[in-house]
Figure 1 (tube, one colour):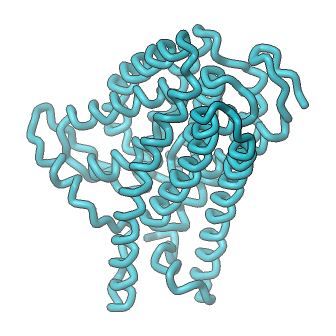
Figure 2: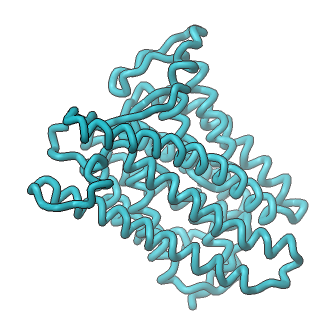
Length: 358
């Protein structure tokens, strides 16, 4: 056990390093800071809700830089799209942190954080999984028909609706291959910024789906572009949370030690899969994180009498990170076999990139 003096608790340091590494892998792969997993995890480890939010936001900033560098090398970043969201994101983060301060001063930060996390994550899980299953079925049909499968396959019609808003100024995002109103991009930045500041997350768990289903970017571009945004929101959030006294920097350093390695692994893994595989991982992570946050919330609402709920939450919180990392490593392994024309499960084959030129 390690004494975290600023947070005023004792917690195993290896759990923070393990959490940083696994969330780094997952975050680098699906383009999120991982705060929707980390903030509930830190609360489970004993950190107060406001402190969990501040610690997570600070570690996200460091991890985001590592992931951004790797995704830039992979060509997964649309800088026009990323920089167009910055102003909205900064405004949103400020408002989100102020909202957190409101609940903090009333002693409701933990309940508010967990409630908002559960509602948002469950809603996004349902839609992302529904759309990804449809895309997967289309890819399987294309494979049976002998058609070539693109790196990105998506069935949602929402991007066409939002791209149809002809409200000037209009932005041409060449890397993402989309033309959309600047106001749509700014609105995405504001909403995800509020969530980032309030929940202590990078905002990626809603920004990546928003970039895919609203702006119309491919999943790979959404992942890389979102990580650029996470650097800005994370850095600003780190500054503001530090001013508010919400950060234990010793805990942050333990997490970054694991995250800087995990982020490299997750980012490289995206080169082996198609867009729907990444969206599958996003939906699975949202489902598990919803359950991990829902159990301690239920315990709080029931007066803290059911300790078994907290124990189950600890198991799910730690288990989800291990499960998601194992799933990512399995996809890379199957992609390696597929490129050498060896057997892979029939359902997973359409999700894999056959060669690096695709």
